[in-house]
Amino acid sequence: MERILVVDDERALRLAISETLERSGFAVTVVDSGAAALTALADGGFALVLSDMRMPVMTGAELLRTVQERHPGLPMVMMTAYGTVEDAVQAMKAGARDFLTKPFSPPDLVHLVRNILRDPSAERAAPSDGTRPRIERRIVTKAPALQRILAVAAGVAASRAPILLEGESGTGKELVARYIHAAGPRRPQPFVAINCAALPRDLLESELFGHERGAFTGAAARKLGKFELAHGGTLLLDEVSEMEPVLQAKLLRVLQEHEVDRVGGLRPVAIDVRVIATTNRPLRGLVASGAFRRDLYYRLNVIPLTLPPLRARREDIDALIDHFCRRFATDRPLTVDAAARAYLKRQPWPGNVRELEHVIERGALLSTAGIITAADVQIDEEPLSEPAVTASLAGLTVHEVERRLIMETLRRTNNNRSRAAEMLGISVRTLRNKLAEYRTGAGDSLGAA
Image 1 (cartoon, rainbow, N blue to C red):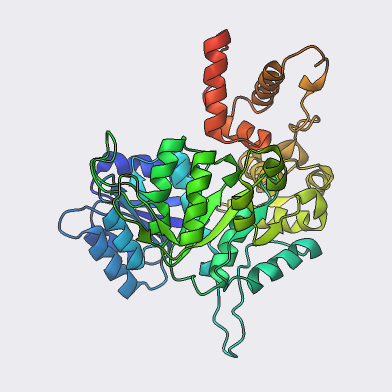
Image 2 (image 1 turned 30 degrees about the vertical axis):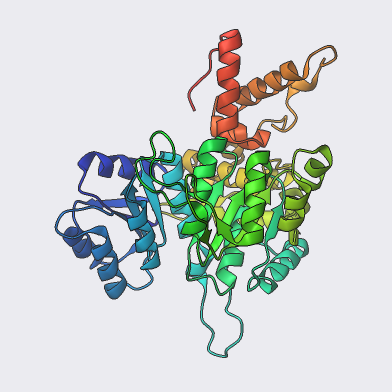
């Protein structure tokens, strides 16, 4: 079990972070000051430090410098309140791995922590013979198709050219993007990711390009956008297909001119960023339908890579099962018995590797004596990608078919919205908006996420 140290002078936030991470399978130690953090770190064994930026006596920046001196290589994430983001940017330039802006949601926290602990840059080993470093051992595969893609990815890692990663939800597009970042010369610089489907247009514009103080109501301070935060490094545009046309035009200009215009800004800001875009919907089809700009598509599609679904790389299922067993093991080894393993290898995996990961995580929680059985990993006989809602659709409107599909998928996931959104291939925000629409129109009773 990976150990995380949380440093914050606010007791309520320490407890909330601790509970969130412990529920996700991490061992957490909390302290209220930089001095206490250094004492705890002296005993060793921590995989990550989460530290507030603004603390009395020893600030987060001072703690970062000391940790780098005493514990080189230990990743740190800085937590900062809105309005002090530029402090966090300075911390990243000083060596912090990433930062979180308060208030942040539990899923955002867990997602960031898991991504950092899986970061391929932490797995690199500097060879003594001067050859290319050994890269990212956590992309688990022996499938020729995926190995060819990884070979191409490593070969173009040093380029500045944009990369377009296409593939179904759950195939590991973000992991491959991090692999590319870690394989190239930008590895010491920030890797910044943003989900283009998770935010409304106005907020996404501010998050991407930044804004000046007073640019709009509530803009109390200058905010640097993701492009500026990723300067010198890599920016991942996740689900770029969901970006609205107005922002597509602005993104195209950034890619062409290598500069951004903050909202409310008077002059452009030069940036040096390697852009990697992902989509779970083929962009070529969206271009043909007019939903995505053709010129932006060609700009992003300089180096196209399409990740295979898990059903096309079944030879990896055994190794992935073992990999996830090691990840979710706690105080004793975790194994999958033969019947459960055979059952898992027969499944169609519409949610791909992410679905398999969730199934093993659930099995780990349900198992006894550290052995996952077939009963622990049972999946609905009818895959979520093809719910029974497909019967008798004649005469229904598209809106009603969509509604039935969403409601049936929620029912089959016990109202787990994150899981349902994943299986439907949409963002949680889109699902939430759809449910609000249905609730207003029909008064449906819906469970919590």
